[in-house]
Amino acid sequence: MATHRTKMLIIGSGPAGYSAAIYGARAMLEPIMVQGLQPGGQLTITTDVENYPGFADVIQGPWLMEQMRAQAEHVGTQMIWDTIVEIDLKSGPPFRAKGDSGDEYIASTVVIATGASAKWLGVPGEQELGGKGVSACATCDGFFYRGKKVAVIGGGNTAVEEALYLTNHSDDVTLIHRRDELRAEKILQERLFASDKITPLWNKAVERFVPGENGALDHLVLKDTQTGEESTLEVDGAFVAIGHAPATELFQGQLPLEDGGYLKVEPGTPKTEIPGVFACGDVMDHTYRQAVTAAGTGCMAALDAERFLSGIEIDLHGHVEEAEAAE
Image (tube, rainbow, N blue to C red; front, side, top):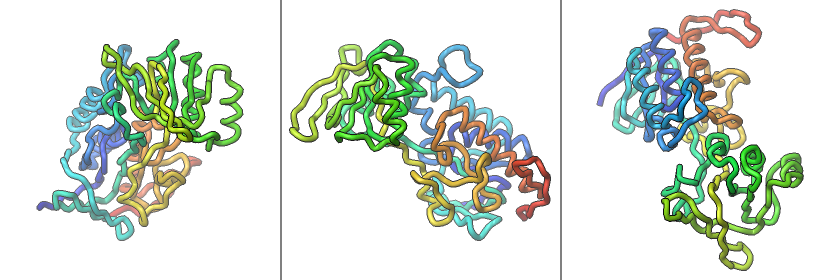
């Protein structure tokens, strides 16, 4: 067991964590990043990435994360393969955390970048066809299905928003819901029902995703939730939209949470209610959930951590005030 001391501890990786690490290292904060169970975050299980600025050609998610990690290391970030299992935020700064390895981490500031993960159905074929017709992000992958037949699975705000978004690319969108009415907000329901490109399919649950001869998604096997009767639906793409689960278990009881379990921050900033503790990326963003926005909030977290340590805070109106810095 070892004790690690740093001016900035980053919990979790991915675009937000790596961006915070890059900015923190360049500010001479000597950041330590504890990478967690899935180094690189959700992009490590994403194939084609076409919407991250700076790349004219389609790139691969794992490659992009490797480049971000290498950049963070190049400027001085220390990467540690560990998972934080305990942390005391209320007694700091300095803040103390323990890893699954038994190592202890003592930090002047903490940047939380633990991310969020899509909720999945857990049915056969779902994981095997990930990136091959099955997705959990229409904004990320909808472009690849332009002019094709797609389905969205779910009945809440996320599902309706995904279905409406997909009409930008497809004239044949099926919304599959296991009940006979939606849980989404009324205004979203009105927009969905007004669209001639979306067909609701009521009282149906996806039993399995079935590939074709080319190894990509071919059709869905559905089960009627009232009669138990099975049917099939041929689609080119299927989007699972039953919500996201932010990784905030570690911070429950120490930091306030928004609806859905996301960390609550001061609007327009990555600041939590505890001075010196910042949250960035999907763990605090229930609206956009994009790699580029996550990277932006990671940058903000590092800049605010640097200002905190310098004893300077800049409020939303641009006024500079003295702040109580970490010892």
